[in-house]
Length: 583
Image (cartoon, rainbow, N blue to C red):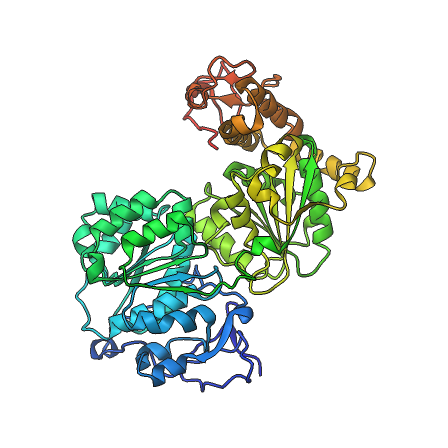
């Protein structure tokens, strides 16, 4: 009999008999829980509200079949390492490898440095033992933060919060998150007035609360400090914030610290030396043969003139959506670039058979959660994204990763590529570069060492005489011409801002940058100034100054009050509320 599913996840409803899976464990077979909840108390039975998983953010799921072990969670219960109430709320019967290897030392109170990939069950690996250790002690009064989790993105924080509330359901305990994109005053009140036994936070927002919300006294009670996706935390420049947080919480000799990272480099080792006790356990679940997905996954690159990039992408997507199981993430260098690509391709009828989603930092938190949920649950779809999803979000079944434009670094290229070929599944990566980016990126040592090959059909993909290319280019041009000027103006400014950071590697002058950006606006985006002139998209003097472009020819610089909602300008119109075209 198939395991019941709820929102794409196997059911763990209480009062159902647990069934033993066949000898070879299957990831879809879950243990159903046998009690009403975790740490059920007398006060709760008499009417205290139970915790529930936030409906908007279901706990992340993925196919972990390649990472399953033969060890059951019940084995830890039999050894007296897990308490019965916590055990009853674990929905899975079998442990993944990272859970098998880390549960015992964490339950024994040791500091652990775990090397494991995203999507291998890390969240359960650190939440279950941390909650179990919490459950063995008297229930602390409200306002006490016992477990602190740091994660690099809002989405990952919300996923961890959902997993935590699943494990806490029916208890007196509560998990809260502290992330950007949420009203900080409301968040502050929730943290100060409601239970937050487990706090999951992005470092930047937590530092904000430490400095402005009088949260430090509550952090002095932290028993367990967890850094998830530590390599990504450092990649995003959070080292200073992590150190500030580490100083604000319980000293490391009086707390337990758990650090998880997919990679181990000098920077990771430095931060581990600061936050972990000297006598900690290092546990790796990444074998030599799988340590680097990017070393074995199929990878192609395509070089095309800037004006042909979108037509090339459309041709590839047209081919891909013919398969019933296509699930692709298309990465762009900027949030505005991802947004305009989403608007472009969702307007093309040929691709209607594949649901489309967008994910970038210019969206509200609620919109990002909704899009993430939709893409996670679909069997077929295309996600247009900036690097907000490069790491830390769990999307099962990604068949391919496309990267459009030069990644900021080889590390970013590798992080993005890591979204596919997970849990032993097949995957494919395609890198689409403009001709001016080829030498600047492909000549890097780290890239030359990868199995990245020229796409077998790249010549045909850019052949102007090819019927497929002609059709794609015509469709792209027509669709851009029908789009609003404001999104084009925003994409133009973001494009210029991105490549302004790479003038040296591209061997461009500031004048070259402006000429290339103007070509992008007029010949790729088909920008048309709302006032009917041939002007390029408008830029504010402040923006020009921040980019160091004062005095460079070819810019359409306008006063703030003259920038209108359509991305143009007009001297006869009264001043309007300023709307910047931000990158």
